[in-house]
Length: 381
Ligand SMILES: NC(=O)c1ccc[n+]([C@@H]2O[C@H](COP(=O)([O-])OP(=O)(O)OC[C@H]3O[C@@H](n4cnc5c(N)ncnc54)[C@H](O)[C@@H]3O)[C@@H](O)[C@H]2O)c1
Image (cartoon, rainbow, N blue to C red):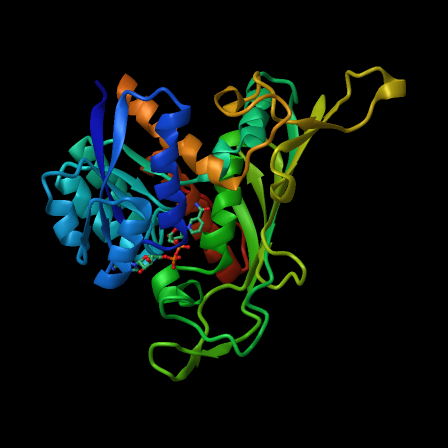
């Protein structure tokens, strides 16, 4: 008989859906000691929360996250609401002894993240941040290949995350739909929203980034605010480019923007080592590009690995070799890994402390863009 894992979800938007899908699917495809129970969804609008609960099978609703956190019949709080809510909800949930899964970025900035890390570590509750790209099988395979030493010494790590949805100057800022453009809710623009993903993957694959030099730009300086109706200064970064140094001696080159016409969610990275190189592209997420200098010279070239075989990470739990999976499965994997970790008494990863390291890189990037100088990156671990 499996133990129930009673989940209380905060936020029913984009991520509320990906997480709910993961809670429902994980136990069908992975052998888990716990049975996820969709106990409650919390959102401020009761009618919308009820509609979401009915669609996804949640047993109850709450309209105030404080009530959700206080409930005795909830084991785990899942935070899928905007960035400025993460700290308050997570700290209260930790004090109430709940396990916590929190969306990225961990916090609005490093100091706020430190308070969250202290709260979960003091309470001793399992905690994890949804940096889901680690769980795309091709990215997990990249991690394995690097850990096996196949690349040798790494020289270069470059990543970019490009979108084009804020180019219109008529787009307002703020409110339920456009909170990402409001710095008071989002904390930052592309740095915390998009580069945070690239940074988390990079720290996982290639270790600590010790210093950065960045530039940011806000192309449209003023936008009407949805909540006030007034034209107000835009305080987020629309684009950010930074270079940096990893502790292992390799060089970092990162770029993100919401002004790359033609790109919707182009997250790519390429890593060059002395023996081999790796490249990955979110638009083709089930493939890993691999170049191995050890290959016979007349056959040497980039190979495109279709990451769908039973030997590939996570894939034996899905269909048959050759059949690929997609974006939503990264969340299923992450939730399954969380449940497997707590079943074994292990620490789910990335933990709040892991995610604090990403926050520190974001803080140093934004500081450098302001000071026009190289900035050192603090270390959480
Ligand atoms: N892991 C990823 O790839 C990924 C992708 C998108 C978003 N995110 C992160 O997920 C979080 C949510 O983003 P989203 O795209 O789902 O946003 P969204 O706007 O689609 O949904 C946000 C939800 O939070 C609710 N909400 C807002 N304030 C609340 C409050 N005080 N109490 C309860 N509910 C509240 C809203 O009603 C809405 O249901 C953000 O932190 C974002 O950075 C992560």
